[in-house]
Length: 256
Image (cartoon, rainbow, N blue to C red; front, side):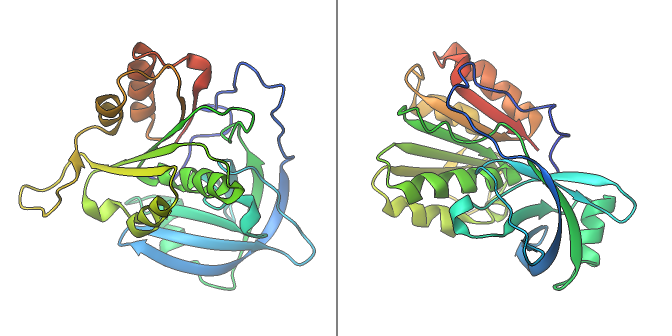
């Protein structure tokens, strides 16, 4: 988890792109500024471009990180552009995974990593005033975080309903941060566990995250959805949401 699919395989462009602008991809050498464990199997990396370099992106886009042997892995950018000239990545450890083993076991503050990007069409459509449903699965929370922080920073009164689906409470690795956003009057956060232990103290929502959305909003024709997470979740959510009235051109997605 945490690794995104290759560029161009999962991004969908809106039917009306007249107001969409993107940023050109570039190759940067970045310094590792911070390595932080968010949970036992998820790391947050803060990367800063070399002196004199500036990184521009749209919240929700992704970058490729290049290993010494040229192998590339794609990761969503977790910070919003207004938060400074750095790149925040959330990386889940995969047993036997070459890249995640390298990040978890070898990378340290001060190291350099080659980064290429940004890429992707998964970013906020500013011209729309539709209420927004943000659907995150696992580390698909990373780009959703950037999108939410971008919207909240603008002061736009646009309702946002964030649904974050994970297996267990442990997997809500930035739960407190998401809860803090609820201080904004137009923001709602609904975490959903799909595999809570029988003896778990969890009293929140349980089940499949996209089905939880339908329980709350059975008619989606006036909404706009931004979804990021496992491919199976994306496919199921799209099928169900469209059957509940969501216009296909307002379902924006990417997959990890």
